[in-house]
Image 1: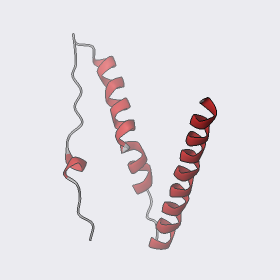
Image 2 (image 1 turned 90 degrees about the horizontal axis):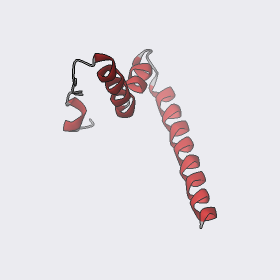
Image 3 (image 1 turned 180 degrees about the vertical axis):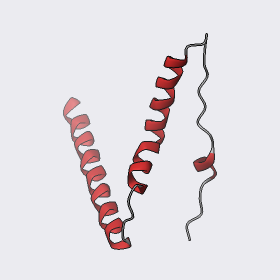
Image 4 (image 1 turned 30 degrees about the vertical axis):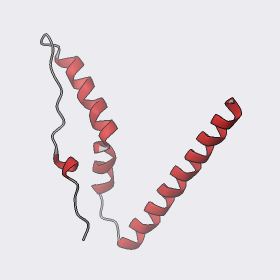
Length: 79
């Protein structure tokens, strides 16, 4: 069983300055997107069989790997 990290359960906080709630909401949405909350909600919306989870995980890892390769290639070209 996988141990959960303590950072998974910390609350997302946003300060509201000068009663500017709209700005605070935008900041909250930005933080939630950066933390991956929306991605996690979308992922948990439907049940996935373990075999489908493995396939999805492999596809995502491949996508990240390709993205990293493109990034490295771009850095080398910029030199």
